[in-house]
Image 1 (cartoon, rainbow, N blue to C red):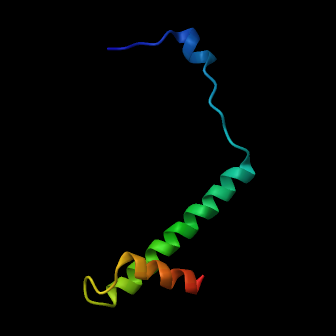
Image 2 (image 1 turned 30 degrees about the vertical axis):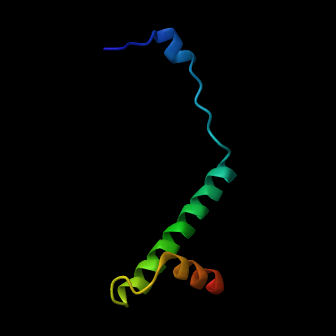
Image 3 (image 1 turned 120 degrees about the vertical axis):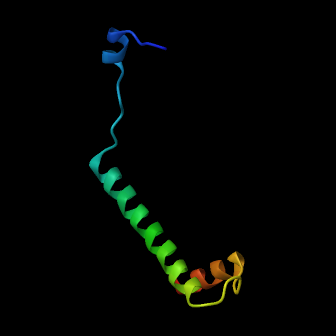
Length: 64
């Protein structure tokens, strides 16, 4: 099993983004989740295979 030297492990630095960057990423992920949910709601109201992905993209662009 591979091992790492304790000194090398302790000297390893993990970069942590600034809080503003972390919060910005959180906002981005929330928006993506909302878009996915909106697509699900729209698609669940229609029979399967009623829309193509390209058509949904066009609709989304018009709504945003």
